Amino acid sequence: MKNKDTMRTYPAIYQDKRGTENVIITSDGSNMLFTLRGIDFEGPDFEMLGAEEIDDAKFDYEMFQDGSGDVTNFNLIITISIQLFNADTKNTFAENLVAHIEVGETTTIDGLDSELTSLLLTTSFGEFKVEKKLEWMEDALIALQDQLPKNSYLKTCLSCKYSNYHPVGNGMFGGLCCFKNHKAELRQMKNKHDLMNLWTEERVKNESLFFVQETFDCPEHQLPTKDDWYYKSWTKLI
Image (cartoon, rainbow, N blue to C red; front, side):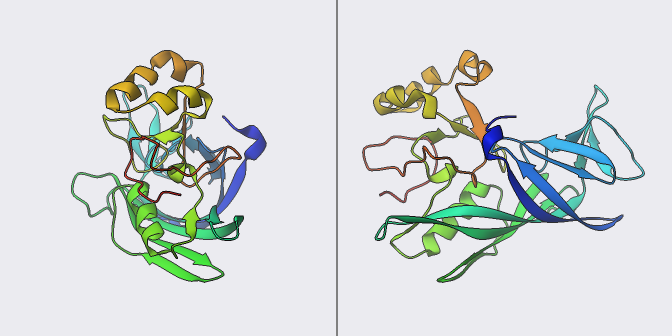
């Protein structure tokens, strides 16, 4: 796991046909892990939480040919501490984001195995909600940002000038790639062709490029300006 010095813990409520339980999800910014009903799960996305041990009496699984499986047919309410930035005072502060997530047979968006059903951001200056069912955390966070006061910015990996999605596509959560180790190359990037030239298997293998969660943050975070090119839908510039 990456960013071991910045491990975060998120309380969550897990529910499936076998019951409802409290769980603590640990994140290093790239992967999530938790233990539930005596089984350890780990993965980058809520529909990609895999376990080495398969116990059909305890969970439903999306099974693969190699015998492994990802847990499915559940809903999750997770509370994530995220950073906000006040452009007037230059202060950064943490607030709680509560996300409701459905995985498996309860999803209602055609063709999807997971969906966000709502987000609630509670701040010292009010509550902000997104109650539309959405395919991507990206869209949900942008919908939240659109509701915030003009001087307030979500200060997370999604809003960072050093992150990009892959032009081929991405999942609901955790498919954002961090390019902070290649700042000089990013300054020269102008289009998708430049992005693909930088996004190589070798850089991913040696972890100079790595995937991050949209809600995470690090000390190198920088909000984008009009001079920055990036591949995502974020439009709130500093």
